[in-house]
Length: 196
Image (cartoon, rainbow, N blue to C red; front, side, top):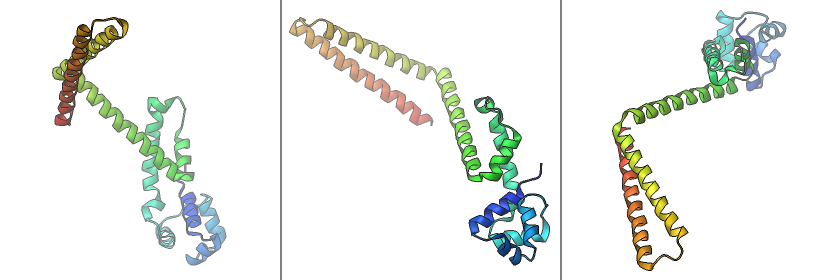
């Protein structure tokens, strides 16, 4: 499949607000030849490509398609990922998106890279939690404290005629367990902050 260089030239020309005839005249070719180039029916390179890049005020690599080829390949990689594989997107789809909606293609690539980075970070944290006994111990302590607080709160809720002395004992217990839970949570957060 021919690289969509003609489509890129047309898009940059339109962005600059130039007509085909004005651009053709400025680089000394006929409007019909420029039309064939933009329709992707004629290859363009060498001096003519340099003239087009200069006249359109764009980087030559943007016109040659090097960045687009890389983006097409990166989109193909994204399309093959199990996350997107069920959509059955093809090389031609990647090619078309890059040619006709380059900003959308870059946005899709940026989102996919962000997804990969987030997945890698989540996996690293999960592995760390699985293998670090301190994290397991702190999480176990937190769950124990939460269970104790919940049990005490249920007793206070379910026994409305409790003696005042007992109620004070249970209230004090909830307070102490809450404070202990806060200390454990702070230790866990400090461990994360220290190792990150």
